[in-house]
Length: 458
Image (cartoon, helix red, strand yellow):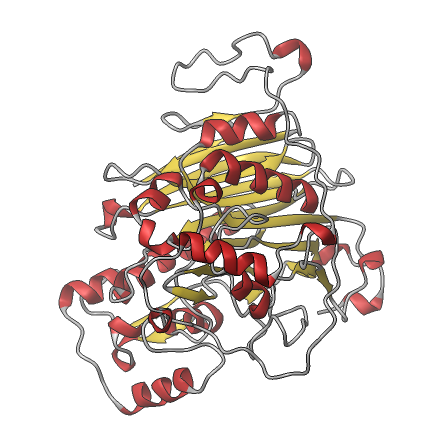
């Protein structure tokens, strides 16, 4: 069920590491299952972002007329409510509208050892082709993988992450070629059942050393074909050897199978906790696409660490069907749950809890949302502190992506998403500026044991 390797390269899995110049023309891997990385790859183009390159409403309308489908506008299931506030003056930054929000509680100067972690569902090429109805307002040129890859790589070059967790990766070898010259190493785990995409984790080789790697194939637990990754890294920052467990997951999409969603998250958190204990109570970060909204039962399970299954309808666990972020519907639904007891079939209980007789599930980690810990603008955050939207296509506008962390880490800043009015001008993602139907999330963390002043206490 789990594959586990200490320091060595895991067999049967795609792997690459950045090479010294003198090594690049030689195959240093004797195992034929491992990749040999050549050096003839050019890195991504220099970024040039100006205010003049922004899309005007008129231009966006003309493109929409050219590529629009017969889908009615009211069929869009808006998952969030735009705040009512006076018009603001838009400020362009190097990343367009995106900027960093900094913690008001912790000064970066108090923490010498920091790292940036990024999570990104990059929209698998095959998935985009198989679900073309979600992108009917997007031009074929914009949907082309080579174009999207260029935008994704340009964006990553702006934020300069030390660790990257990707979902929906189906061109891992091409990402390897892009990242190798910039000093990244990476591993990939593909979904089971003949699916073409999977998850990947990349890290800066000069800043982190891989100590252990595991992967979870949920199919072996009868929890569908999704996969998750877990890596233990030693941070070579100021030679202090800080250790951190990184988890990466793409949770099942099906909104009606909350039992499977809960089961996948439960298993990942249990394994992450076991690795943390093994490596001296190492700090934990869990990132990915959870296919659940901030008002959902699954989100509350992550925050509170426990859940009474019989108080909830498994078809409403993810909040993707009825709960609307920013409205009262999610609160009302939760109150309804607390007045009723729901029937779960035996197989559903087993999926969610791992046992036919267990109706209350728990996870052993005390987790915090990185974005909820750093105050942001009402233009882009909801009442819980999460972004109003991390994903946008013809049938969804809302938040499903998160970065969670344990008490051993302190978020110093997070990369804010885009305001809803800006997203709506694009008529969906990807766009001429952003290469996926998701927006990447990023957080700069500090190790809690490295504080240099009293203001760094949690």
